Amino acid sequence: MDIKTKAYSVHMLTASGAVFAMLALLDAAKGEWAMMFVWLMVAFAVDGLDGPLARKTEVTVNAARLDGTVLDTIIDYLTYVIIPAFALFQSGLLPGWTGWVAIIAITFLSAIYFADTSMKTKDYSFSGFPACWNMVVLVLFAIKPDFWISLIIVLVLAVVMLLPIKFVHPFRTERWRLITLPMAFGWTFFAIWAAWVDFHPQSWAHWGLIITTLWLMLAGVVQQVLFKEEL
Image 1 (cartoon, rainbow, N blue to C red):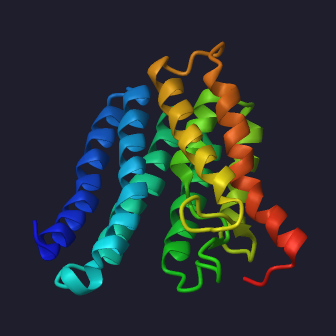
Image 2 (tube, rainbow, N blue to C red):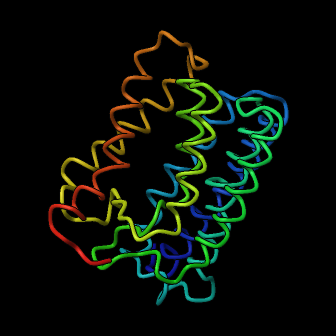
Image 3 (cartoon, rainbow, N blue to C red):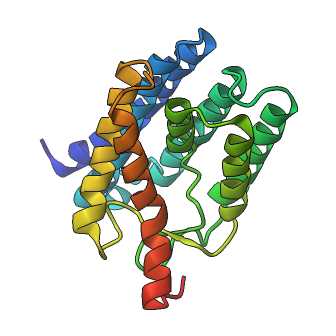
């Protein structure tokens, strides 16, 4: 297979995320939350793979007719923002007006964040919470905190998207990558496990989700404090 074919194949892999997004949406519409999250995790895995493959095949040179950044952004907004926000609202985890407040904050501020040309830091981390609402909502489904706690978590993270607070990229942030990358794989494993057992409250997957989520959320903040890094 020549390099151009490989490069366009990476674009096709990225585009497959749209199919997984639709499958997730169909399950969400039926209230089949566990299967919705399984499809979102498949899309999450594709999103983790296509970046390194795109750089390896130099898609901007060898498959320049398609804009991989635009393609990736469209699919990420569907799988990271729209479908998780719909699930949060439709499931009743945030009842009444709290659901409306949450989905407005998530969708509006995430659109602003995705358009921010300064969302990446010098070390390829994220400046501000990277709108990973698929991860947030899955954890909320798993641990089911009081709706006031869920609302506060959502609103705080929505605001933090616009603040100069560092969040590590599991693949591209070099510092602590030997820990962060396994944590990201571990989070994906525990997320699929939790969805597979339909978020059973006694599942050990929930503890794995909590531990890995805390690392992925706080590692960048700790780096920012310890090493006085500029974004």
